[in-house]
Structures are given as structure tokens and as C-alpha cells.
Length: 155
View 1: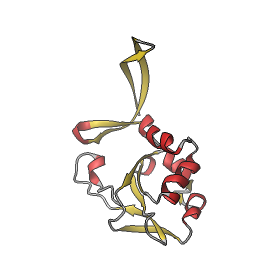
View 2: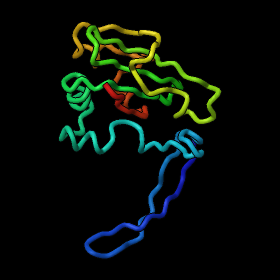
View 3: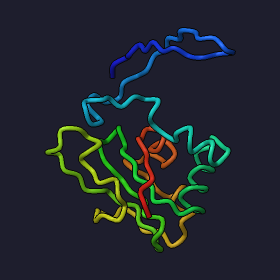
């Protein structure tokens, strides 16, 4: 992991100030054009927290996956694997998504679509059971999502 120092101009109280902050790089060449994936891009993004008016991971999961039935796709950095929760289907599958490792950047190796075929790890009659019962490599879903780059696919 590499530490990157960023230098940004930030508007604050009507004036511009210089702000320096540190970003921890997780993976080089994750995105197209060789852009890296940073640690602060993992987990629930600010737009989801604002939309659900919470920063509690379980509440965010319940809101978007269980109640709104958004299909969740996530890349778990710690084991280099794409997963999907196809929440619009009942019973609800949790699966490993296929990828094409010939594509040079990781983000482009997966379709980011839970409609695609994949190895089903779990199948839930009650979608609310996913949070407590899913374990990936023995790790809770809460911890996995905090270490994942996440996106919701189209329904």
C-alpha cells in the first residue's frame, strides 16, 4: 500500500485555502486510464449516507438492499473478488461475479451486473437474513463491505 499526499484548494468561508491530506492507495491501475483505488473510496459513499440519512452500515444495507431492493455489486479488496447481491430476486442470491482478467484494469474486468451468471454462495428466503448470515472468508458482511468498492447495478 502506498501513501499519496494530495494538495487541494478548498473554498472555506468565502476564501480559498490550501489543504493537504493523505490518501492511502489500495490498488494501482484499478480504474481505466491507470487511476488507483484509494482507501477512502471503500465502503459506503457519502451519497448513500446522505440518501439514507445515516452512516450506520447495517441501516444503509437495510435501506438500499432490503427495502429499496437495489442490486449490490462489490469488489472485496482483501481477496480480489467481485460479488453481487441480486436483491430484486426472491429467494435472494449472494454470488461471486465472473470477470475477465485479460482486461488490464480491475474495474473493467467485471460487468458490475448482478443479472450475470455467477457462483451462488448463499440463497436467502428472507433478505434481512443476509446481513447476519453472510461470511466471506470468515469475515462479516459489515467488515467485507467496509473493505470493498461498491456500486448498485441497474434493475
